[in-house]
Length: 159
Image (cartoon, rainbow, N blue to C red; front, top):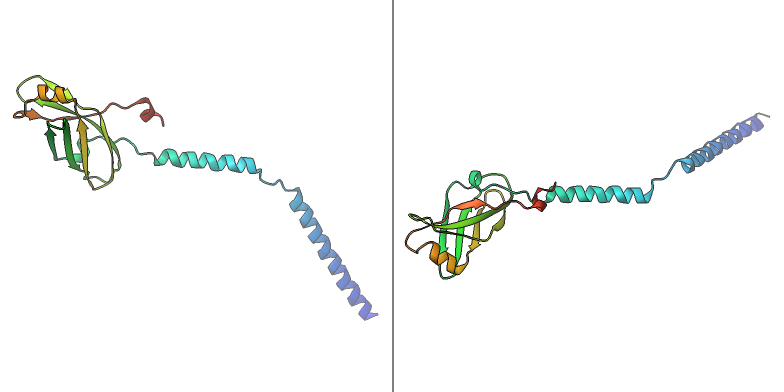
């Protein structure tokens, strides 16, 4: 009889454990499964956020450069600028060069020129002028080449 009691206890334990396993399985089945479409939408939203954050932002030229070198090539109707980004910032610099007479009021503006700038690097930018305007606006002997920020477009301003 003692053996039968032990068997009965073992059997009741097995039955009890089996019943617990069945309940756990049915509970798992009742839990709502994540909707794949929602998960994909969340992942796409995260990717868009990361893409927006990774877009280069516009930098201003003045506080970054300090000293710079500039030149004008009359035969090619081009201006050039070399400067070093002495800051830890990175982004895009967009400038317009203006070839001016040092004593007169004649000047010629270049097309905007943009370049991606990384921290602590030297950059070289080229500016394109209209050939006839450049020769007439600034004689070769007395040309001054100041730079100004290119205006932002609507696309630049969107967050």
